[in-house]
Length: 331
Image (cartoon, rainbow, N blue to C red; front, side):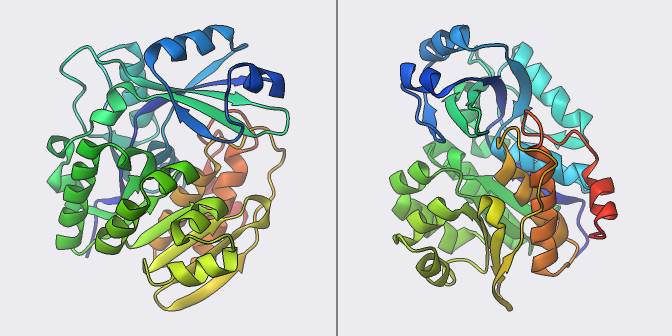
């Protein structure tokens, strides 16, 4: 069936605030290296004041995926919640600037737009403190049935899954997508998120999801095992499609008619900041999937997108992913 959008993403509308730091800064502020911790507004302000020179860019996991898919030449829409403030206006404009339709209305009250404080250590690892703010208030009222029904893939952000109201919105969107004969996908987002919501995650995926994106640790957490090999085997029955990212080791992909296959990574020109690597991978993978490409090619597109994103600060591509894909003979 023809579709208007390759992707309709439902996720956190977050402005990323990025800065370089040393490992001592993480220890001083009790920041878990490589992890993500939710914080309140006051804590966010305290850490922000002590960060070095910062760069502010529109982020949010699912929004990043939509932006990468659009850079490949695809069509995307984004459902997320922002405040009636400067950052909210900037976030919406940034999505529309890259060709992604921004769907949801802003908050009716004074709740501020969410932001993520990302401290990047010399090894390019990113450690995040997130003030959710308006982002967590995505509700069923924000789910546009026409947009979801017209999208080849509706894609959910695992971070948002922890919010009960937002989960209801995701369930509504998944039901609309399935009724329209479309696919759905989810990124697990964070190992801690998976562990906290394990039973709910498993049930939601079984009931509503066609494509699961995860890194190694998230996949093992979902499968309840310390072995990647066992995780791949156990997750085969939970979702028709599975893509497990492994950083420089590439990814493992499988589909309903395709057994598990390891696909090499695409090396970046330089490694600067891993923020958004998994998001970029998902955007590239979904772009290929909506065009009926083999899963290995979908994985290559995902890895190519990730290689561009990690070559600079920030989670969005600075080069045309479409041109890069053409140069690599992928499209």
